[in-house]
Image (cartoon, rainbow, N blue to C red; front, side, top):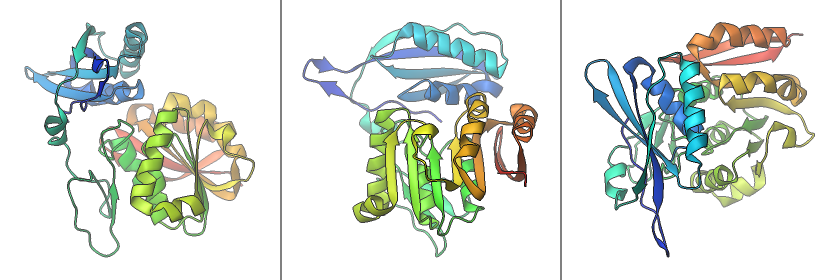
Length: 303
């Protein structure tokens, strides 16, 4: 999915970005694209190179350290188990790209009943379907990635009416918006990135209205530990597996009796190890959803 970052300028002149170019095997390009966004990429372009490779061009805010970006990408390459590519980092000055990057975004049907779309493309829905508006100007999850789609599928297949939910790593707030449409009584969304929290708040107000948000939703910077002492009936966490597993004990402590946890952001190749980790922690799996190389699962404490 090609895309470019939007124009941003300051009084000092045009915004500058770190541009990162890497050529990788086609079968791992999507996984590495997701890793780029995890590292803080503000936008991404892809281009076929021959019949077997893809060039990824990722843009990072100038406040990011090139050394940190390079180290993170090398670790990501090790995780997807491919030959280490050459990583080229250069500087790029933002131009008038608004019209260009917007044309790459289309509505995404995450499930048969949930569509996520940008604000400039209206979508008609039928009774029982849900349209979520997410402005992709901020790279915190637009519904286009399979990990978000599997998380939405998990929420849709879980009873949420009159329940209290915790959204860990809320990002754009797309999962929180869906959960509110699906009838939750209250929701707490946490994210370690304060910019993500601001972005989620804007999206929640745009989709649900200020009154609904003020009455039912709490958004705060931090992690699951910072979500207060009241237990949750449902927890959803759309985060990479190697980060999720160490969080499991804390998430279980936050769970109300009879509650469940939806884990997403998981690669199929790590499924066995991840499920074994959940079982070892005292959880049992009672739901699973898959899109291409990604899956999510629902787990409950063993009674």
